[in-house]
Image 1 (cartoon, rainbow, N blue to C red):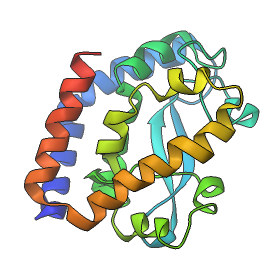
Image 2 (image 1 turned 180 degrees about the vertical axis):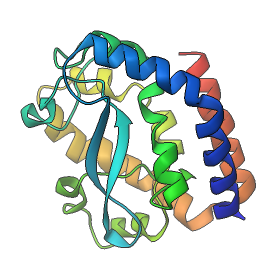
Image 3 (image 1 turned 120 degrees about the vertical axis):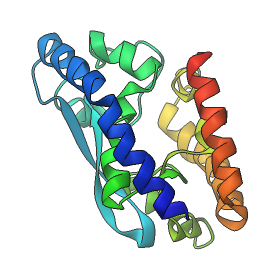
Image 4 (image 1 turned 90 degrees about the horizontal axis):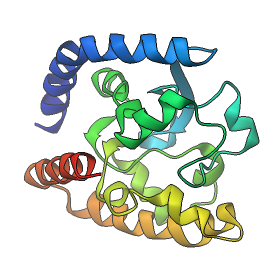
Length: 196
C-alpha cells in the first residue's frame, strides 16, 4: 500500500506542480550560474547509494566548502535559494526519486556516505526502509541550520548531538511505522511549511 501511495502521489504531484517547476527553474537559471538541479550521492535502503535530486539553492561547488549548512544566511546560498529553502521548495524534485523507487514520501531522510559510515550497527537499521522526503526528525529539527549556527563547532555538534537524536527518532519510525502514521507525518510537514 505504501509503494502504491508513493507512486500515485509522486506522479500526480509532478504533473500538477510542473508549472511551478518551470517558474523555479527559470528563476534559478537567471539568479546564478549552474544547473537548475543539484544531484548529490546519498545512502538509501539496503545501504545502497543513489542520486538525490533537488533544486539548486547554492552556488556551484558550494559543497566543497562543507556538507553542513550553518545559519539562515550561509553565504553559499543564492538569492533564489533563500526563498526556496525557507519553503522547502528545493525538496520537490525528490518526487522523481520517489517515483523511481529510490525514496518514499515518508521515511528517514537520506544521509551522505560520510555520516552513514559513522553509524553504529543498531543505527544502520534506519536503512532497512526507503528514505523519505519527510520524517518526524526533520519536523523536529526544521530549524537545524540556526541551531548549528549557535555551536562553536557545527559539524562536531551535528555528529555528536543532532545526528544521534535524529537517528533515535528514525529508528522509532522504522520499528513502528504505519500507513496512518505516514499520513500524520505528511500533515505535520505541511503545517510546519505553511507556518514557517
